[in-house]
Length: 116
Image (cartoon, rainbow, N blue to C red; front, side, top):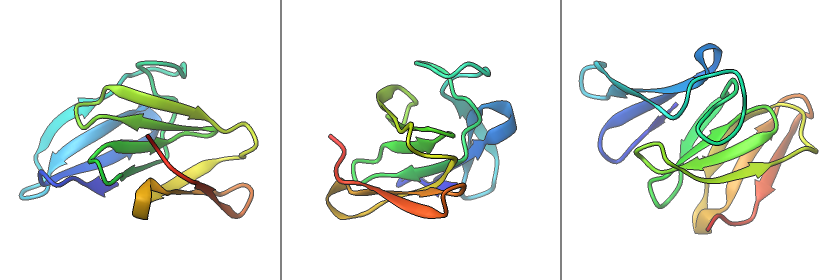
């Protein structure tokens, strides 16, 4: 899960293939964002594991072998296929848009140097 600068809590809803957004102040459900469904591709998520926020306020979402960058409204900016990975899980953005992603099946942390 991640907390936005607008006071929203964004959670990866793994089994429902979506992101859920709640108010940080009282936990009330606000909306679901991005797509629904089992098929991976534009407008869809396929079992998201982790969600983070970059310095530009965009959402970073991990799936098994893909890192997706979304606007706060849920529009896809970028999709990075990472076929060398096993099972991506956590994601965190560091300085200069450097992204750190955990690969739970490979027991490793991957570093993607920069995001646009």
